[in-house]
Length: 303
Image 1 (cartoon, rainbow, N blue to C red):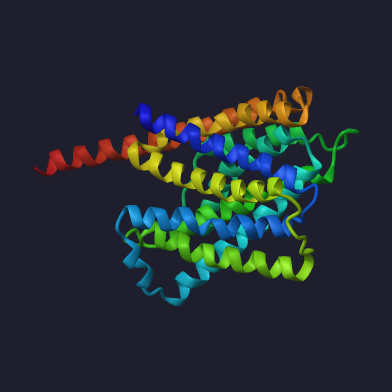
Image 2: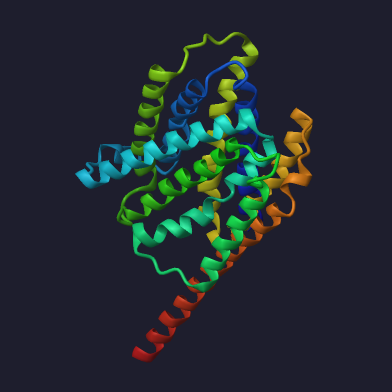
């Protein structure tokens, strides 16, 4: 359990450092170029995972039309999410972007109703409302500090939530690495198309910038791989709360690299977002426990 916790914390820190690289690169390069680079290197952790699990041969597996459509929708959602998130990093405080992006679990809960036919009860709807109240408190519409750019990380969270929800439509026997690899093809393709259509091809100016582009891919890849490994080592309900370490990480990194400390803007909204997210995690864990108990009771009764 300790190894799983340390692994997921390291993964979240990798994502936070990736955000720092994005923030620095947006000063000289378009978000379209940065997005494509991120997606290009995104193949690396997937291939490493398939190689580690000795499932590289699964890449030859055929998909039906619906599965390809889902992969395309996931790839498009991720590409749009990256553009929104990367633009937000260039316009808002670092910690503000990261905190607003944690509205993702609330979108996942809400989207699971129309897309998956899930039944969401009182506690989880309450968590969604609480979390979005926290988002509104941070954005502060109507106040002098309000910026339309603050909508970007929320839109990014919605797009990432769409991708996370759509993957659940696949049958359970489909290999996760295969689904992610084929979704990544569309993400890279869409980001390349957008870069060629709207972005400027800026030559990499220095060895430092080249290092940042490499770090962008490696840190993002390490983050993805760390999450996969951690969630395989322990129960998701036990590990998910540790993802919120990303908020203090972003506060520290924003202060260290960019001399930002938007504490007056983040509080108390950040507390509402964390509370809402933890309430969803607690409720999902409680539901799984109740279902397991009901199943065990049924087995005893039928024995």
